[in-house]
Length: 421
Image (cartoon, rainbow, N blue to C red):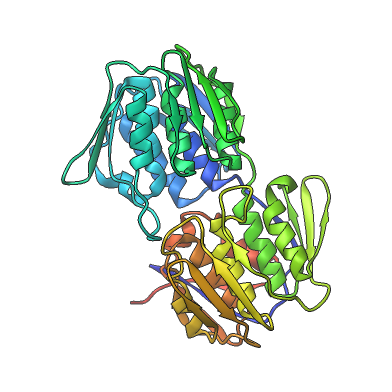
């Protein structure tokens, strides 16, 4: 096991390049098995979740290779079924996309219940509802194996009782091969849903309305290989934006889509940060003392739940009170105990965090309780007095590519060391 050591007190300055969107890549990669041919996927982040998918697809019979540092080739010609024998699927949440992809192409699929970050209950009941509406049966065994199968899939009108990114994508995957038209109402609108739909359309699918609350899919009989580029990672970009604000820095964030950043940009401007947009890049710079704001996470285009934890760290060092309401994920405040070890003053319930700003944080041994909490701990370490030691950083490696080097290039004093324990 490794850990990060961070010496705080440095203002971030320089330029950082943003990689491919983790949340898009982990949907597009399993979607590639729906084509009985080769897909070339560009701008793939080299993160642990991608490495796990490389193992899973290889196990299923695909030929997977990286043509360069960020270009992934997936040849699914030899995949005959989508039945995962081992526990690889439990290493991440996005493995459940193999259920929709496998159901679409093979009319059956099976994985163990997915893993991922421990941020509360994350059931797949809406996925099940969508699959059953298309004509599939869904069984969950006592050992947690999910089996979906259908004699044939037939398009249907499906209303999601709650906005769900995972269910929207999974139903969309299965519906690509369904007979007739499928309509998903109250669909999630996140950029990675649009990206996944665009990838499927590039293979020959007929999907319209992605990015709105109503998605229409006309079923097709076959898909063909394609070359596709993953969109930039809005959450990675947002993490560096918040880090610039917390350290009173001045950085250029390159290779982004500013439109996707609007929820976080609006909040940082409200706090007093300077932000300038230049096409596919953005300058984020400290101009004056920042003021606290209230945050409520919501489905896109609301403030993203994946940036709630980094933003809480920033609010924790501002003069005044603020309130963070978690409206998307249940039980996502476990990391607050770690920040409070560093001197923060935050009270919380399962859905609300009341933050009383303090003048400074102090370095301490803390742990990354999940992926985005790990990014928050790094930001806390960057602003804390003294040395911060972050353990359980495998969570961070699941979703951030080369994070310590990117921060070092901005002037941060951070290093990865091997845990001696």
